Length: 413
Image 1 (cartoon, rainbow, N blue to C red):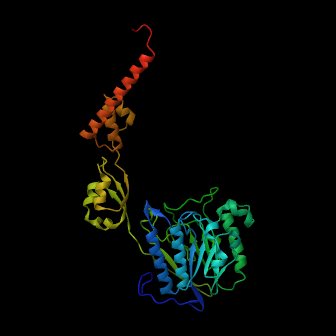
Image 2: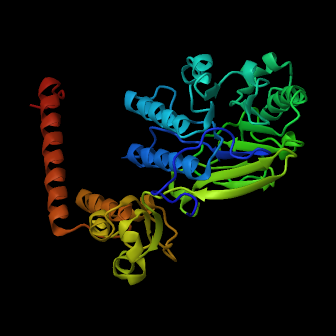
Image 3: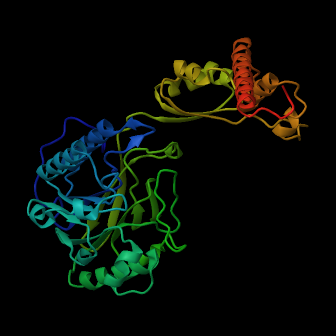
C-alpha cells in the first residue's frame, strides 16, 4: 500500500518495529485551531490526525515527533484541546509513543500540564529548558526534545551571556551532547527554531531577537537526525537536518508546497533512510493573475474552480462587481487584489489633476474614478453624489445663517 493512503490498514503492532533500529514520523506545526483567511481548518486538521494514525498503523511507526506549535495560540478553545487529546490517545493506541515539544505559538505551562503522568501512558511532553537533557528512549535511540527557547528568558538558565537564538540553542545542544554520551544508540533532536539556509513563507511568526533570528545547521553536527519545526515548508538542509513543515497550508505563499511528514528509519549505527509521506490536501490553492475577462473565460483554469483562490486583477480600470463575478466561477476566492498597469504620460498627482475641477460634484466623481482604477462614476452614483453635495451645501448655509443670527455684524440691519 502506498504510504499515506487511507483504508485497509493492518492492526497496530506494539513494540519496536525493527530490532536493530527505530522508525519515526517527524511532523510539526500542527497549529490546531488555525483559520485560513477566516475559513476554519479544524475539520481538515482532524482529517490530518486520522491520516497520521493510519500511517502509524500501516508503517509500524515507533514514535511520532511533533516539533512545536502544536496549538495556534496560547489559549486554545475546548474543542481544539479535545481534538489533540483524542488524536494523541489514538496514536498511542496505534502502537507509537508520542513526543510533543512546545513552539513559539504554544503556552509552555498549559501544554506541559501533567507531563510526568502522561509519560507513563506513552505521551511525552517537553516544554521546559530544564528538561532538554532528559531524553525519551525509543528502542535504542535517545530522543531529546528542545522546545522553543526565548533567548532573554532562558539564557541565564543555560548559563550563557549570548542572548540570541544562536547562543541559547548552542548552549542547549551542549547539554544534549553531554547527556547523549551516556546512551550508546543513535541520538535524535527535536528543535523549534529558524535555521539558516531554510526557505520561509508568509504564515510564520517572526522570532527575530536582537537582529539574530537564525542559527547555523552546524549547531546539530554529530546528531543522527534533527527534526525541526517552525518553518512551514518541508525541506532538507542537510541529510540529517530537516523541517517537516506544517501539514496544512496557512497562507497563499504555500501554494507550491508539498505537505507531509518525514518517515525516518535510523539503525543502531546511526544510518538513516528518510521518505516524505504526503498529507491529504483538503483543497488546493490557486494563485491567479490576469484581466478579469480572461480569467473567467480560460478553460485551463477549470482546476481552480474547486480551489481556494487568491486573485490579482490587472485590468486598467477596476471592474465593477469583480468579487461577485469571480466567485460565480471560482467559489473559493478568498483574496482579491488589483494591480493595474501604470498610466504612461500621467505625471501629475491626484491633487494636481483635480485642482482645476469646476464643481464639488466633479471632485467627488473624479475621486471615485481615481480609487476605482479609472472606472468613471455611473449616472446613479453621480446622482447620489449630487444629492449629498446639495445636502451638505444646504446644511452649511443653515449653520451660517444661525451663526449670523446669534452674532450679528455691526452696522448691518
